[in-house]
Structure formats: C-alpha cells, structure tokens
Image (cartoon, rainbow, N blue to C red; front, top):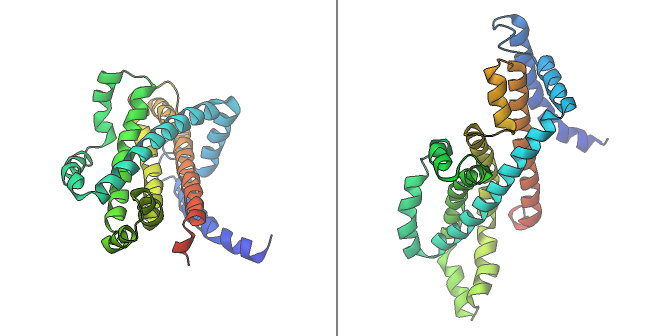
Length: 253
C-alpha cells in the first residue's frame, strides 16, 4: 500500500479510534452496568452471531429494499417538484406554503394514519419513506434551481434555445450540485424514516430487530443493530459522494 493510500486511511481510522477508545473505557470502568453498556467486543460478538444465524442478512435485505424503493420514489418526486417550483415562481407561490406546513411533521407521526389507510404491509412503509425523502429533496433542489441566474436562462432563450435545451444545458448543470446534495441528504432521511416505518409494524428489518432485542434487554444486539445502521448510512453517503464527484466535475475545477 502506497503512502497516499495510508494517508487517506488516517482520518477514518482516527475517527474509529476516537469512538472505540472512550466506549471501551466506559464499558470497562463499571460506571454503567455491563448488561446496559456492552463493550465493543461484546457488540461485535453479537453482530457475528446475527450474521452466522442469517438474521442479519434477512433484516438487512428487507430494510434496504424498503429504504431503496421509498428513496427512489421520494427522490424522483421531490426532484421534479423542486425543479418545477424553482423554475416557475407562480407554482412556487402555491406549493411552498403547503410543503412548509408538511416539513415539520415527521414520518413517525404519520405511522398511525398510514397504518389505518394502507395496513401494515409494505406499501405503507414505502410511502412513509417516500414522504420524508420528497420533502427533504424538494428543499435542496428548489433552492438550487431558484438560485440559477435568470440572465443565463434569458441569454439561452435569446439565442433560440428551446425549453428542453435550456433545461439540459443551463438549468440542470447549474443546479446539479444542489441536486446531488439533496440526494445525499435524502438518503440519510430515508434511513431515519425507515426506523419509523418498521416500528409501525414489520416482521423483519433492522429497526424491527432493534425493537425486539430491546424488549428482551439484549443490549449487545441493540448496539450491533445501531452499528449496522450507521455503517449502512456511511456506505450510502460515500457512494453518492463519489458519484457526485465524477458527475459534477466542474465544481472541483
């Protein structure tokens, strides 16, 4: 491994050490009962047991499917709505007050309503996640599109560019950084909404397993589940960030 590769590893390794060291010290100090604060070794042991038993793979697959489908639906709807309201001031005047009213209402508050309307099936869970992602993505995309200088659009129109070319060659490149930031934020929101959705009624999933393990006071398994949720969030963000750097090359130049 080269020196530059080692240097790139130093920040994540330092962050891991900054978490593991005080966690281990607190667990070993006895200040908290061992059954309520497992150390890293106990947590990783519980994680390994879940992996060997197949529970981890089943829960991870169910949660990723729900979060992915809800994210895709919410991201597409939020992006389309954000471009529309950012480009059309009159539509923005109609839609923005409604979205501003809905944004403070968390997905978990809608669990009873979604259950009453759609039951405890997968549709309710996907729609709850899509709702949360739509509102998050809309905010970033709407702000990015509305900040595109009007002079750029007018110049393209004066040169005879039709609407689809103004969108593809002016509006979309200018708003691309905001769109990618919206997708990264929306992915984290999807995981937050996933927890609310699975707590509303599920038979598998990471949040469902957290609830079951918590009821039986298997705190080591709870810590393992939280660790998996955090690692999934980090992995998704890294993938989206890498994709963003490859797509929006001009931002780094």
